[in-house]
Each structure stands twice: as C-alpha cells, then as structure tokens.
Image (cartoon, rainbow, N blue to C red):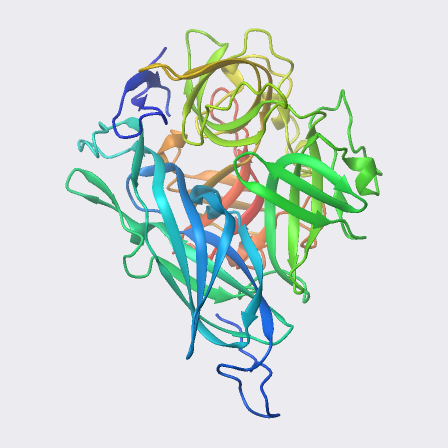
Length: 520
C-alpha cells in the first residue's frame, strides 16, 4: 500500500498503546423573562411553587491546533441545574448517553427534556462525565511523539474523563413552562499537549459555556428552540411519529407535520420515498435505515423537519472517515469508524466494532457507489461532479477525509495487531464534518483555508458550494449563528457538514457541498 506520509495505528480493544498496522494515504444571550412568582410584578428567584421542564442541547467548537482529532467519545451520566439560591436539582440520563463530540462541530445533540425542575432562577448547568474519553487522533506535529503516537500517525487513546465541568448560563424555569438551554464545549480549553502527552482535563476553566435557546443568531422560527440533524438509525413507526434507534447514539422520537420534507433514498434503482411523497408512512417503513433532521419545539417536543430512507432493511452498516486508500489494490481502503447506524437483527457481525476503531474495507464486487445528497441539488448546481463518486466501483473515487457508509457482508474481528476487516457490497458517500477558516464569503459559494490535516489537501484554499433558499426548506443549506454565508467572519473559524466530492486530480473548484454552516 502506498505511503503518502501518514501511518494509522492502534485499535479500540487496546487503547492504551499504539500498534502499527497500515500505512496511510493522506491521509448573546436572549433577554430573560422573570418566572411566575407568588406575587404579580415580582421576579421569582427560588421556591416559586410548581415545576417546569428544561430542554438541553449540546454543541462543540474551537479545536486545538494539534493534534487533529478524528473521534472523541465521552459519556454523560447526569446534569445538575444550580439555582441562584436554594437546592440544586440533578437529573440522570437513563441510560447514560455516549456522545462523539467531533460530530458536534456542525451538529447538535439532544440531551433530553427534563420535567419536574423546580421553578426558580438558575445560573449554571453541570455535566457529570463518567468513565473514559475514547479518542482517535492524527499526530500532525512535525517531530513530537504524543502519548506514544509517532508523528504522521493515527492512534487511539483512552484517558480518564470523570469530571464535573460547569456551564455558566442564566435561565428561568417557570411553573408548567419549558425552558431551553444549550451547552457549548470548547475543545481547545480541554485538550492540550503537555510535553509528550496528550492531556485532557474537562475541569479546566471555560471548557463549557452555556446559552439560552434559541441561540442568538439562529435562523429558527419563533416556536422553535434548536435543530438536531442527521440522526441515523433503524425506523419504527406509530401513526405519524417515527422513532429512530441508533446502536451507537441512542434513540430519537419525532412527529411529522405539514412542513416535513420527505427525501428520496440514495439508490435511484430501488426508489424509496419518491418525489411527491407527502406522508410519513409512504416515505419510511419499520426496520428500514433512515436519517432524520428534527426541530426541538418550544414545548419540548420534536418535529421532523426532514426524513430520508437510506437502506430498505435493517442490516450491518458502518460509517467512517476514509483514512487509507490502497494504491496497489483499488478494492481496499481503511476507515476510522465514526458511527454504526444499524446492526443486523438477528446475527449482527459487527458487535465488537466500536467508534474510533480502524476497519479495513474490501470491495471485491460492489454495487455502484451511491451519494446521499439529502435533497441538495448537487447534480444541477455542479453538473458532472456527482459522477466522480456515484456509479464508481473502485477506490479511485475515494479521497482522505470523506465519510462513507458501507454495508458489511462478511466480517473478521480485530486480533492482536491486526485491525478488523470486512467485505462490503454497498458504499454510500455521506457527510464530512470539519472546521476551517473562511477566506472568501458570499451567498452562493465560500472559500476556506486551514482544513484538518487528515484531508491531505495540498490546496491553500478550497471552495464550498452553498444552496440558497428559505431556511428549513428542502435542499437548502442550514445556517447557525449567521443569516447566510456573506455574514461569515474571516477572523474566526467556521464549521461545516458537507459532501466532499473530488476528482482524481483534485481539481474540482468547489468540492464541498454544504448542508450546514455554523459560526458563533
């Protein structure tokens, strides 16, 4: 396998040491309303009588300069809401929620809507993190070995994560009301290189900050608190409500409305949810694999903004970041696992595979490659670009940094220094999440620099294609913190969730097709 400067090492089963296994191609705040109190015209501070609900979401930003983080999993066991005076209230997440913080660069995770919170004025929310943080990173320093990981190498690492970081945020809980708050994790304040060690300390100052929902600068409607995107898993239906169950991310339940967008599946030869579909039951069926964007409403419920079937049946699906491409064998590549949207039932083959693991993917006789456009009009706005991936059958279509989903047909578990491997018959291009620095701004296209090093980009500036239209409508780029791309601040990083489509000579002018742009 050709070596373009990086190595990938280690496996999830033994995250305490690095094991060389393959060379790599490379790789503000809203005004607060006083809560209802016992007397008209007074602000309730504590013991206000009655209980309310607090809906909590979480995002992340500000990556460290080094190393390049690929996955970063933590487990959230509970949240404590601390009032300005009186007794704090702790709610347990049951079960505890394991979150890959790297998804939160562009996405938002819903931690829950917690009822029976005493009405009062609150000034902070504290997360209880338990167990270990499981990290996969690229050591992109020049000559420093980090936690046993040599330069130009991708390694796994487990570090103690048990901690109680505090997000300072002022919010009011009113009797029978719903209050939304968001928690923002700053990677750079939690992750550092100390000597030759990758250090993680969630108790550092300013690791967490907080804000009330909707966040200042959001493009949501007046009855909406937040937007939760690309929750992918197995479908179950009850009337006009869908529950998506993810083996790696929990469950999400949301209800279709008259504003729900129904998108077709990626495979045009086996159409699901075709154009003109107008009901949930006509779009998805039980045991299918689907992706949902959901709106967190001001009453604490979730509504479906967009739903898209991905595959017609429950099966072993692995999603991962392309890390290795075998230039001597165009039927083999390596991914770093970023999600397991679906597992076969019964008889799943991938039970031992975890987020952050390396997986060698063999495609000896695949179906034609697919692209999940999520309703974005890639084909019309950039004619011919889809053909660089859609319809391909070899790794010539792949590029480091792409996210692909594969259907696992056979599987060999990791053993010793050998990472897990599989045969796959389906390859779908999905959504890369990245942070970069805007260099050129506009309403239709953007320029950006300082891509994460695992993209192996040799270009000083890359192009990002935007899709214009009313926010919340089908096929439109979603903006968070800015009205549109022309408002980006070139002095600050921005985060993107985008399709990454490139030709073999890396000459596409706008290879990133953005479903989401965030800057705060």
